[in-house]
Length: 370
Image (cartoon, rainbow, N blue to C red; front, side, top):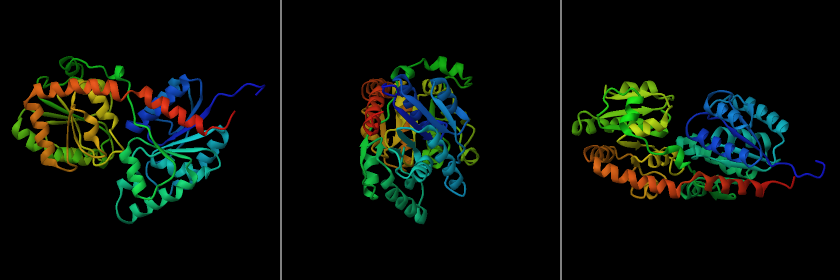
């Protein structure tokens, strides 16, 4: 290139275009674009991620892919192989299970490949499917130059399943200023909440089995017995919405996964009832930065990250979840104290800039001199 060193070129691949994975990808894309890198993103040409890629100045490569594996995989793999050939990235960064499957089948080690599970896919299934998925992840390590785990718990889960290739732990992060605390009453008014003074629990996440909204709804009657005017807002959409609506009573509202900063502000407590996670989820970090108390199931060591900003109960302990939510709705002083602590913890421990810098260094180390 006329003696000039070319800008680092990375291709991110993601099937999810909404919610947590998409937000992590978007943060990396913005950061790497700001560094002057040549950033490309292969994802479905719809939803929030595609819009964000365009706004960031990165290049969008439309890639049609379904969320689950199945008969569409060969076609998705062929399409991705063509996109990779056209883009010619120095590093291929694959996000979550579908990109990890099709991307490694498409490239098969022919160029540096990074896989970031965002929670292992075999945790979502059982029986023979789980066995097959674990076998695939062990096999695919031959085509994986680096696995990025977001927590030591995720790395250990992989190692226990025989996934022993080169791996690093790079926790997710957030921009604390983007989640600066807002006035609760003003947020409730802006959102059009009718019960503006009601004790309110907010749960943000894709309406799917992983995120455990069904367990939260199982706990909810006990909360309502202790706090009759309590309200619950499930913020997000997903495949389980109809089933969850059938489980919910009139005190539960379902709202789109938008205006998240206002929904966090509207909450007295934020619930994180996930069945599994890779590490501390973005929702918990965002709630803490928004100065709201967090009550979660203690999966992937979530309790060790909260640092006094809430509490984590044993996984699937529905009665414990109800008890801790109730305690904070009945004692606003406790919730406020935890919320203030959470803002400090999120601002000092979970800054996205650190995560982005570490990721950039890891990718640069894989790139051949350009």
